[in-house]
Amino acid sequence: MGMLDELMVQTEGKTLEFKRDLSSPKPLLKTLVAFANTAGGRLVVGLDDQRQVLGVDSALDAEERLCNLIADSISPRLVPSIELLSLEGKTLLVIQVYVSGSRPHYLNAEGPELGVTLATPLPIKTSQTLQALPDTEQVTEQVTEQVGRLLACLGTESLGAKTLMLRLGLRHRPSFLQDYLQPCLEAHLVEMTQPHSPKSPTQKYRLTARGKGHLPGAGR
Image 1 (tube, rainbow, N blue to C red):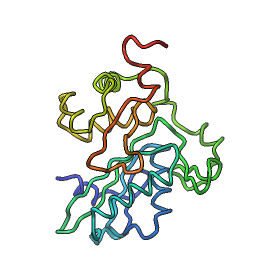
Image 2 (tube, rainbow, N blue to C red; image 1 turned 120 degrees about the vertical axis):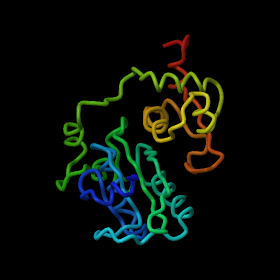
Image 3 (cartoon, rainbow, N blue to C red; image 1 turned 90 degrees about the vertical axis):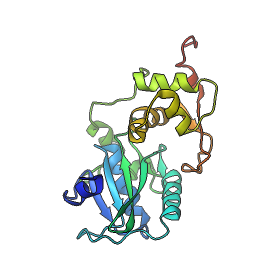
Image 4 (cartoon, rainbow, N blue to C red; image 1 turned 135 degrees about the vertical axis):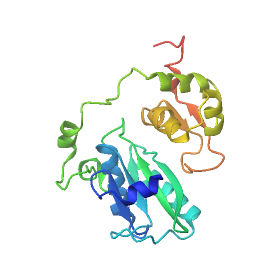
Protein backbone atom coordinates (compact mmCIF):
# COMPACT_ATOMS: atom_id res chain seq x y z
CA MET A 1 0.00 0.00 0.00
CA GLY A 2 1.42 3.39 -1.04
CA MET A 3 1.53 6.52 1.08
CA LEU A 4 -1.53 8.07 -0.60
CA ASP A 5 -3.52 4.86 -0.18
CA GLU A 6 -2.67 4.89 3.53
CA LEU A 7 -3.65 8.55 3.89
CA MET A 8 -6.98 7.97 2.14
CA VAL A 9 -8.13 5.56 4.85
CA GLN A 10 -7.00 7.72 7.76
CA THR A 11 -9.23 10.18 9.62
CA GLU A 12 -8.49 13.88 9.41
CA GLY A 13 -7.15 15.17 12.70
CA LYS A 14 -4.19 16.84 14.37
CA THR A 15 -1.66 15.35 11.96
CA LEU A 16 -3.65 15.04 8.71
CA GLU A 17 -5.79 17.46 6.70
CA PHE A 18 -7.21 17.56 3.18
CA LYS A 19 -7.67 20.74 1.11
CA ARG A 20 -9.46 21.13 -2.21
CA ASP A 21 -7.04 23.68 -3.68
CA LEU A 22 -4.90 26.74 -2.96
CA SER A 23 -7.68 29.29 -3.52
CA SER A 24 -7.83 30.15 0.21
CA PRO A 25 -4.20 29.99 1.36
CA LYS A 26 -4.60 31.41 4.88
CA PRO A 27 -6.31 28.33 6.43
CA LEU A 28 -3.74 26.13 4.71
CA LEU A 29 -0.85 28.19 6.10
CA LYS A 30 -2.40 28.08 9.57
CA THR A 31 -2.53 24.30 9.34
CA LEU A 32 1.17 24.12 8.43
CA VAL A 33 2.05 26.39 11.37
CA ALA A 34 -0.02 24.21 13.70
CA PHE A 35 1.72 21.07 12.47
CA ALA A 36 5.18 22.62 12.94
CA ASN A 37 4.32 23.85 16.44
CA THR A 38 2.96 20.54 17.71
CA ALA A 39 3.42 16.99 16.41
CA GLY A 40 4.05 17.52 12.70
CA GLY A 41 1.65 16.27 10.05
CA ARG A 42 0.67 15.94 6.40
CA LEU A 43 -1.57 18.18 4.34
CA VAL A 44 -2.91 16.89 1.03
CA VAL A 45 -4.07 19.41 -1.58
CA GLY A 46 -6.43 18.15 -4.26
CA LEU A 47 -8.90 16.18 -2.11
CA ASP A 48 -12.22 17.31 -0.70
CA ASP A 49 -13.60 16.38 2.74
CA GLN A 50 -15.27 13.29 1.27
CA ARG A 51 -11.89 12.17 -0.13
CA GLN A 52 -13.01 12.75 -3.70
CA VAL A 53 -9.90 13.12 -5.85
CA LEU A 54 -10.03 16.54 -7.51
CA GLY A 55 -6.37 16.93 -8.39
CA VAL A 56 -4.35 20.12 -8.73
CA ASP A 57 -4.24 22.05 -12.01
CA SER A 58 -0.78 23.08 -13.26
CA ALA A 59 0.82 21.15 -10.41
CA LEU A 60 4.36 22.50 -10.88
CA ASP A 61 3.11 26.09 -10.84
CA ALA A 62 0.97 25.31 -7.79
CA GLU A 63 4.00 23.82 -6.03
CA GLU A 64 6.08 26.92 -6.74
CA ARG A 65 3.28 29.19 -5.57
CA LEU A 66 2.91 27.21 -2.36
CA CYS A 67 6.66 27.34 -1.65
CA ASN A 68 6.64 31.11 -2.13
CA LEU A 69 3.58 31.50 0.11
CA ILE A 70 5.26 29.52 2.88
CA ALA A 71 8.53 31.44 2.55
CA ASP A 72 6.79 34.84 2.57
CA SER A 73 4.07 34.17 5.15
CA ILE A 74 5.58 32.13 8.00
CA SER A 75 8.27 32.99 10.55
CA PRO A 76 10.68 31.63 11.62
CA ARG A 77 11.41 30.08 8.22
CA LEU A 78 9.61 26.80 7.69
CA VAL A 79 10.83 24.36 5.03
CA PRO A 80 8.42 21.44 4.67
CA SER A 81 8.82 18.56 2.24
CA ILE A 82 6.48 18.90 -0.77
CA GLU A 83 5.81 16.02 -3.17
CA LEU A 84 3.74 15.70 -6.33
CA LEU A 85 1.97 12.34 -6.26
CA SER A 86 -0.48 10.78 -8.69
CA LEU A 87 -3.79 9.18 -7.72
CA GLU A 88 -6.52 8.08 -10.12
CA GLY A 89 -4.69 9.86 -12.93
CA LYS A 90 -4.65 13.20 -11.11
CA THR A 91 -1.83 15.04 -9.36
CA LEU A 92 -1.95 15.87 -5.64
CA LEU A 93 0.34 18.03 -3.53
CA VAL A 94 1.43 16.30 -0.32
CA ILE A 95 3.07 18.62 2.22
CA GLN A 96 4.96 16.91 5.04
CA VAL A 97 5.72 19.13 8.05
CA TYR A 98 8.05 17.88 10.78
CA VAL A 99 8.08 19.00 14.40
CA SER A 100 10.14 22.18 14.30
CA GLY A 101 13.11 23.04 16.44
CA SER A 102 12.42 26.75 15.79
CA ARG A 103 9.00 26.79 17.45
CA PRO A 104 6.80 28.70 17.85
CA HIS A 105 6.13 29.56 14.20
CA TYR A 106 3.55 32.20 13.31
CA LEU A 107 1.86 33.92 10.39
CA ASN A 108 3.66 37.16 9.55
CA ALA A 109 0.37 38.93 8.79
CA GLU A 110 -0.87 38.33 12.35
CA GLY A 111 2.42 38.73 14.21
CA PRO A 112 4.04 36.60 16.92
CA GLU A 113 1.28 37.25 19.46
CA LEU A 114 -1.79 36.34 17.40
CA GLY A 115 -0.28 34.36 14.53
CA VAL A 116 0.81 31.31 16.53
CA THR A 117 -1.44 28.27 16.11
CA LEU A 118 -1.36 24.73 17.46
CA ALA A 119 -3.18 21.60 16.37
CA THR A 120 -5.96 22.33 18.86
CA PRO A 121 -9.33 24.12 18.59
CA LEU A 122 -8.42 26.52 21.40
CA PRO A 123 -6.69 29.84 20.59
CA ILE A 124 -3.35 30.04 22.40
CA LYS A 125 -1.15 33.12 22.66
CA THR A 126 2.60 33.02 22.39
CA SER A 127 3.30 32.92 26.13
CA GLN A 128 0.90 29.98 26.53
CA THR A 129 2.30 28.30 23.43
CA LEU A 130 5.82 28.21 24.83
CA GLN A 131 4.51 26.49 27.97
CA ALA A 132 2.41 24.05 25.93
CA LEU A 133 5.17 22.83 23.62
CA PRO A 134 6.53 19.33 24.28
CA ASP A 135 9.78 19.09 26.19
CA THR A 136 11.36 16.93 23.49
CA GLU A 137 13.39 18.18 20.51
CA GLN A 138 14.34 21.49 22.14
CA VAL A 139 16.99 23.57 20.37
CA THR A 140 20.37 23.35 22.04
CA GLU A 141 23.95 23.99 21.04
CA GLN A 142 24.40 20.22 20.80
CA VAL A 143 24.07 18.84 17.28
CA THR A 144 23.01 15.35 16.26
CA GLU A 145 25.38 13.01 14.45
CA GLN A 146 23.43 13.56 11.23
CA VAL A 147 23.62 17.34 11.52
CA GLY A 148 27.32 17.18 12.30
CA ARG A 149 27.91 15.04 9.20
CA LEU A 150 26.05 17.48 6.97
CA LEU A 151 27.94 20.47 8.39
CA ALA A 152 31.26 18.73 7.81
CA CYS A 153 30.16 17.77 4.31
CA LEU A 154 29.38 21.38 3.39
CA GLY A 155 32.50 22.93 4.91
CA THR A 156 33.25 26.06 2.88
CA GLU A 157 31.26 24.94 -0.18
CA SER A 158 27.76 25.62 -1.48
CA LEU A 159 26.17 22.33 -2.52
CA GLY A 160 22.83 21.11 -3.88
CA ALA A 161 20.70 18.46 -2.22
CA LYS A 162 21.65 15.70 -4.69
CA THR A 163 25.36 16.33 -4.19
CA LEU A 164 24.93 16.34 -0.41
CA MET A 165 23.01 13.06 -0.48
CA LEU A 166 25.70 11.51 -2.68
CA ARG A 167 28.52 12.60 -0.38
CA LEU A 168 26.61 11.42 2.68
CA GLY A 169 25.89 8.07 1.05
CA LEU A 170 22.11 8.56 1.26
CA ARG A 171 19.46 7.41 -1.21
CA HIS A 172 16.22 8.12 0.69
CA ARG A 173 15.36 11.78 0.16
CA PRO A 174 12.70 12.05 2.94
CA SER A 175 15.23 10.78 5.50
CA PHE A 176 17.80 13.28 4.23
CA LEU A 177 15.29 16.12 4.57
CA GLN A 178 13.97 15.08 7.99
CA ASP A 179 17.18 14.00 9.72
CA TYR A 180 19.84 16.13 8.05
CA LEU A 181 18.72 19.21 6.13
CA GLN A 182 15.59 20.32 7.99
CA PRO A 183 17.24 20.42 11.46
CA CYS A 184 20.16 22.41 10.02
CA LEU A 185 17.87 24.98 8.41
CA GLU A 186 15.67 25.33 11.49
CA ALA A 187 18.68 25.78 13.79
CA HIS A 188 20.10 28.41 11.40
CA LEU A 189 23.25 26.35 10.88
CA VAL A 190 22.66 26.16 7.13
CA GLU A 191 21.01 28.62 4.75
CA MET A 192 19.73 28.54 1.18
CA THR A 193 21.63 30.37 -1.53
CA GLN A 194 18.24 31.29 -3.04
CA PRO A 195 15.97 31.81 -0.01
CA HIS A 196 13.17 33.38 -2.07
CA SER A 197 12.99 30.37 -4.42
CA PRO A 198 13.07 27.37 -2.05
CA LYS A 199 12.26 24.82 -4.80
CA SER A 200 14.59 26.19 -7.45
CA PRO A 201 16.35 23.36 -9.35
CA THR A 202 19.61 25.27 -8.87
CA GLN A 203 19.09 25.69 -5.11
CA LYS A 204 22.21 25.14 -3.01
CA TYR A 205 22.98 25.21 0.70
CA ARG A 206 25.87 26.73 2.65
CA LEU A 207 26.91 27.11 6.25
CA THR A 208 25.92 30.18 8.23
CA ALA A 209 28.35 31.82 10.63
CA ARG A 210 26.69 29.81 13.39
CA GLY A 211 27.11 26.60 11.39
CA LYS A 212 30.80 27.28 10.80
CA GLY A 213 31.19 27.58 14.56
CA HIS A 214 30.27 23.88 14.90
CA LEU A 215 33.00 22.66 12.54
CA PRO A 216 35.92 20.79 14.12
CA GLY A 217 38.59 23.22 15.24
CA ALA A 218 36.30 26.26 15.13
CA GLY A 219 36.61 28.63 18.03
CA ARG A 220 33.67 28.79 20.42
